[in-house]
Image 1 (spheres, rainbow, N blue to C red):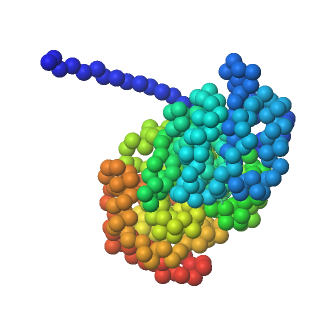
Image 2: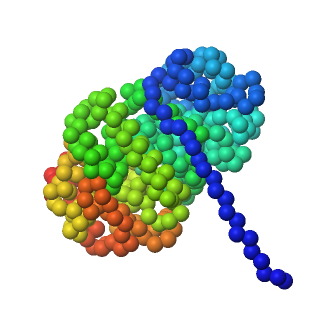
Image 3: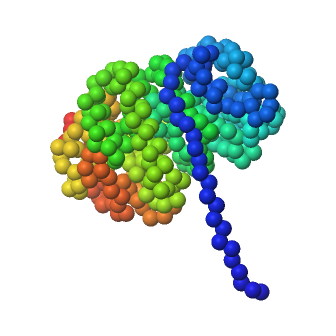
Length: 385
Ligand SMILES: NC(=O)c1ccc[n+]([C@@H]2O[C@H](COP(=O)([O-])OP(=O)(O)OC[C@H]3O[C@@H](n4cnc5c(N)ncnc54)[C@H](O)[C@@H]3O)[C@@H](O)[C@H]2O)c1
Ligand SMILES: [Zn+2]
């Protein structure tokens, strides 16, 4: 046998627009219509999937959508599917089977579209179904929470929870397009208006002192959910995430470093420990406070910088403690995170406000002491250390 090898190299580039608008389904808003192409058919075929809480708060959406579709040669293949909202859809919902069945029954092919309107959880789960049915149907995301518009809905990851593990089943599949409709956000609960802001604080802390200053200056306007401050926060946060995905050299996370997961190793664990009572963004706020405090105790940032970070989170309205911190086993959780990364442990810490570093080792005793410090502050609002 003659030993031989072929060095196969495939380069694929992805290109998708992320649009910021309002009233996306008013007839004279052409964004959606301009995105879809008929591909030689008389109309573009589209399956619409809507988060149940978006549907409840925007009862006229389906009628509006039908009028929009009629006016713009879009063929809605079926009455829009209304699906479970929140983390439940990723954890214990038969949504995947449901969508696969509809795709088969309605003959939705790789040139058709799935339009998903919902929070990060719905977008993640429907995105996974769309990416896997026929190995990928064109997905247009219309994220409907702050967190989904500035992070979850604009990137390349899709997934569901499985075997008790967060995002255990998933894939890296960029969307066909994203439309961020600001009007959708008006019906969010105060909790969900706030939760997504944690991702903005996160990306500012690791990448942009200017953005951190903007958030700090606007913190009371953001807490009051004033339009200008919120729109600017979402745009800048999305821009920094997209820039990282495009230019970090590792869009599909082949290496172990995950700077965008700053504060997330504990956040994922706290979400699971709370059986998803704590929102992702709320857990991320606690995770940021924890890793900032650890960075401070390791002498990497000053106490004053740590105080400013905590102050921003507190003024945005986050609680920096939760009962689950009492049962957080730092060593075991770090090991679980390492397994999830699939290589060496890689944790993002801060060296400055707006600058981060990856470390491969954590002093578990010190980290446990930081977690215990947060946990001991069982008051609703804790004082900055
Ligand atoms: N794929 C990624 O890159 C990525 C990144 C970050 C987070 N995530 C995932 O995103 C999820 C969290 O997303 P989230 O914070 O949007 O929470 P969520 O999807 O759980 O939504 C929160 C609640 O708001 C409701 N809702 C959604 N839109 C609404 C609207 N316009 N008006 C009223 N209610 C509305 C939902 O039904 C739900 O009850 C987590 O599962 C997290 O793991 C994914
Ligand atoms: Zn996150």
